[in-house]
Length: 442
Ligand code: 5AD
Ligand code: SF4
Picture 1: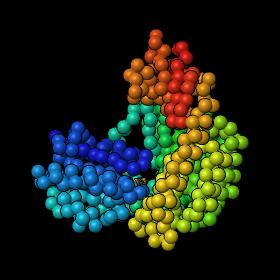
Picture 2 (picture 1 turned 120 degrees about the vertical axis):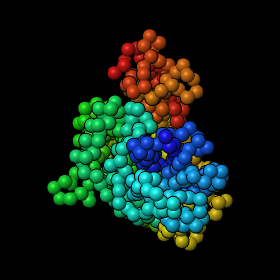
Picture 3 (picture 1 turned 90 degrees about the vertical axis):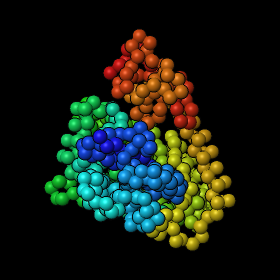
Picture 4 (picture 1 turned 60 degrees about the vertical axis):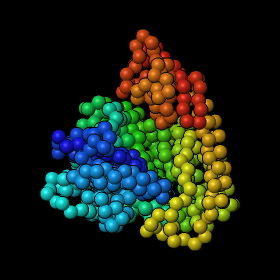
């Protein structure tokens, strides 16, 4: 039997594409190898969101080159966003690569592997959903569902529209059928994936149009699905009906990831985000009114070209006003082919670094304060497995997406995939600690 080794970089969309790649390879008779040395096929599913993602990959490719040198019959394949953004240049810069393909061409990998082709090949059309391929799920009780691919936004910093193409939604009935299959297979939590989930359905043909809020209701109605999450929405398309779904649909979790990027309306405009600080704060206020206990998380970019000290302070103000449960913070990184890469007035590292430090301080301080609201409460936890630090304890997540480590009920320890009630006894910015309440297993 031939074997493969796959390394995945990047976001949940990529992790899910990798589940499809694995499913497809296993249907071709490939088995998963424990290491690259043992593999006949060395694969990478790549990301290109920031420069750091590129440099990490190049290190790994060095190892693939060495292994290919040792055994030239090995096949080296590179898929995903970095591959797409490099296209044919992959083969010039990395001549040991046999096959390269973009996120829309995963199915072509099978074609390449089953042909007798000896020459390097690249596949970079935007055509396919990995959603139609077989899948090998990483997590037993949690599943990803790709509701759309691509993105019609034109955010000045972002490479994704060029790596994943125009937005294409999958028909709702197909998605509901997929969720039902996952539920029948034991999945209790699904995460709906799209580059801009709340513009879902606008491109569907007349008669098949379904809004994102309607899709949430259809997924909520699937028997056996206890929790529904999604990522990421765009603040410009965040409608009241979607926010209401968090309050009204039992399985839609009390967590909204609402990427801010900057708190300055001037910078948002330069980023081409098409909302301003006021509109963003409106959405936050609506969330707070309709779903008072909702966790709100975000993404923030520091040091976009031209960002002044006063504009950065506006980002800090929004962070203090919103009080995020957590935030991913990024230093701006110019990406090939994006408009921001050519903007004048790049911010030097010596300015970006202290801004980042101030931002991280605020984010962590507020996250730690926000976490305290769970202490003393009994929270529903979906058990994921043993705690990473103490095997006598269990680990899981609350609906607000915070990780909890807890002491199990000694008489009947809960199993992964079960929902239990845990009393929270302490909290840090990132994790909660607690004790399972006796016989709560659902
Ligand atoms: N530089 C820094 N951060 C970026 N992101 C996207 N593109 C860039 C870039 N060029 C961040 C955004 C986005 C998250 C996934 O990555 O904050 O929401
Ligand atoms: Fe995901 Fe974006 Fe990275 Fe592509 S570039 S893998 S869409 S984070």
